[in-house]
Image (cartoon, rainbow, N blue to C red; front, side, top):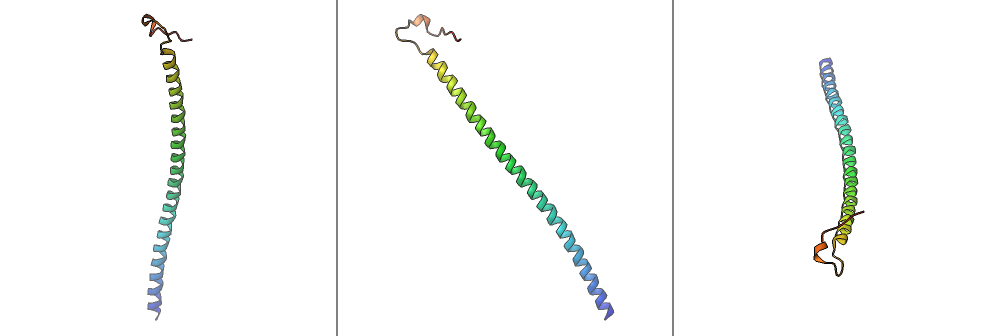
Length: 89
């Protein structure tokens, strides 16, 4: 009877060690998942910020292009000899 109890205690001790190892692995994976989730959130925010900056830069460049095109558009009655001669302030 004592041998059976010792064998059962040894088996339970092994299972306990296994469960502790699994718990440690789970905790490490949960921590890694949280860190990855935070990094993903930061990357998404950075991407949104970059897209916003790109949109602002595109709008600014389009405005500048429109200004330059309007300055370079020949005035009514302008002789061909002065086309392309643009002075910018």
